[in-house]
Amino acid sequence: MDINEIIIDMINDYHGHSDIFDKMQRYYDGKHDILSTYVHEPSRANNIEVVNYIHKFIEEEISYCFGNGLTYISKSSNEQEINDINYQLSHWNKNHNQELMRQLEIYGLAFELYYINERGEFSSRILNPSNAIVYCDSDNVPQIFIHFYRQKYDSSEYYDIYFPDRIEIYQDGNLIDTKENIFSGVPVSVCFLGKEKTIYSKIKSLNDSLNQIMSDMVNVISDYRLAYLVVTGADVDESTAELLKTKGILNLKGKGEVSWLMKEMNSDYVQNMITEIKKDIYEACDHIDSNEKLQSNTSGIALRTRLVFLEQRCKTVFDAICNTITDRMRFLFQYLNLKNLPYDYKDIKVTFNPCIPQDIQTIAQTINQLGDKISTQTALAQIPWVENPAEEMEKIRKEQEDQQSIDLDKVGLTNG
Image (cartoon, rainbow, N blue to C red):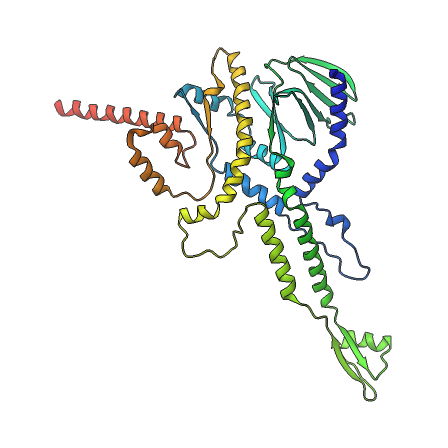
């Protein structure tokens, strides 16, 4: 197929699927369908309740995955390599990985576009299917990437098309500029999870049902306060009714009877429905209800056992992000190679440090029992609060050197 035909198909595909991606973003933002589809009853309460479990679960998983940050490890124990990585990425937004995971969780697909900023620094922009589309070959290697955007105070539609050798910039469909692509290949990483694995796809219908029930019950309760006064055997005109509202007095002539008509509510039935829907929502996403009453055993192992399925899901998401981080290292090292720093991205390993309960005592005992069977750097990588084992080893080495220097000074003073 001709490249121009592929680009036309990509642009049409992008516009054809924009509605579903916009809805996925709206649901994360709490703008659910019920806000526009809820049936309004004239002269009755019409409150709308939105319980946003999609946003809640996504943010929980981001906290679990990146609450402790990432750890880069050099397989060849090249400390300078790790130091250069941390230095070259030090100007990035501290929440960059969290935002990448957020976009991946919302859409099931995210992109990381690499470029050199105006200060000559290696940088990255996070995109998603609502503003970009990619064409890959049979090996899932990006061949064409299109980024759609608008400029502030400009009604024109812009899009940049990335090829392995160049970048073409278009305004309203017209080519206005061409730039050289300094990287080897299209400078983008495709972070793929799959739409069917998103929180949105798993619980949208359940969340809609919960919104409907909650809204109905809130309105029933609101209307419940409008109890009706039943008058039997007497006539009550409008003036008497108004007097009743202001004075609270009703004067009946004859043998009339007065009573209140109240609506009966089966609260147990409603509560059971809400409980069952919430249970299905949590089970569909492998999450746990943190408000659930715990048993007496609250050790780190016991707490982590309750999180085992959530950790497995987070591991699946992180694996997709880890593939992108590998691509990030590949393009970063291409940039460093231009600075005569010949690193190999395959030498870098990324360690996942989930922010979940850890039994530090057990970890310490295990490391101690292993002794010299593992390296100090690998042992340090198992400790949750150690983000950079190589840097930690350098601190240990420096402290030991300082300590030896102090001891020698003491020896010199004693001999004197």
